[in-house]
Image 1 (cartoon, rainbow, N blue to C red):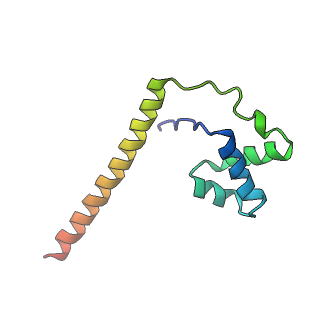
Image 2: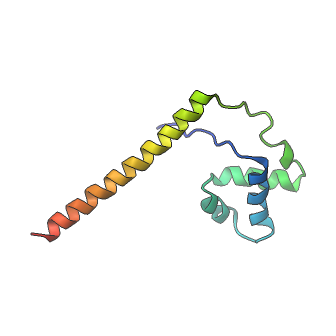
Image 3: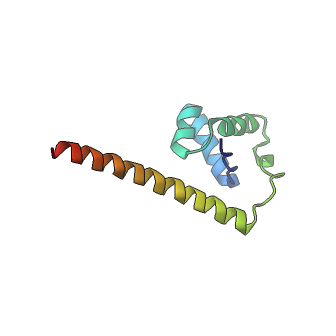
Length: 100
């Protein structure tokens, strides 16, 4: 199984995600789904915010090189293209079956 690259999130994004859970009353899985991030990550942010340490989250994370950022972008794009291709294959098979 392929390892999913770690996301790089800004401090403002973390604060807004926690605010959606705490202030707006949305559940952690719902906020995570809306923002397309892992539920465990959001859960860690919520716990850190409750302890007053949300600002310290991500400080020890090493910055990615340009090559790593480009690789992550290309992998995302490839995954999207594969999904589109699979959808088109299914649609073509459906319409071929219907035209008989």
